[in-house]
Length: 313
Ligand code: RIB
Ligand code: CA
Image (tube, protein in one colour):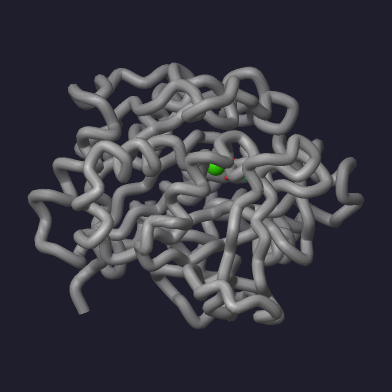
């Protein structure tokens, strides 16, 4: 089977970085057409910097990195330096990027790619707020039918929120963008906190990254050491949830995950529940299903896959 053509839309973020590395380490299953960066964990100049740092860490300066939207559609930007550090990629001491940003705006790259690639062959993999994706859909509604799928990290249902009691960070930052994406009619697979909070980087798992003895393995272990300090304190868990790498893992080994095709709506009106993904998990409404909402993961299988693939870089 030929590899899946994808664009990763990202706000690195240490977990975004690991997701990008997993995608780059998996050419049998994934052809990464480019990285589009968005403001999220940290402001856009830093996410655009961090994405290039990751490409250079992987020796892949051939991957075009585009800067995208610097703030949500309608709201002020909310960032997460408290989790990811001031740079967004705190932990390892990695050199400043030397590769340039690709010319042009990320949204134009998304639109142009979808208009030039064969219909139904490109998958978008958003790992941050959905601002770039929504802007592309608003500016070029024709791309909706050209998309194969959107596989995104975001949302929560049984696991409730991580930035407010009701909302997960990516959806919370730009709920209007999420509303547009979930209402687009594009096939969507959601990787929510319900899944990623079961993908905990325990010490043995992080030791396995470090034991690779490679610059990538060491950097990943140091990234995890950094951002788990926050999550361990917050959740009392024995490791930090590794959110974003679950997205490429879903493309590489879908059977690691289970979920349901249900209706998911986005709260945009109430400040109390802004950004909540209202997932009709028990199908108690007659609202049409619009997403595969994942609910479970084989965590051991995920970390075995991730470690094996990182060893290739
Ligand atoms: O809530 C977790 C998500 O928000 C992850 O994508 C993390 O990188 C941040 O963007
Ligand atoms: Ca992210």
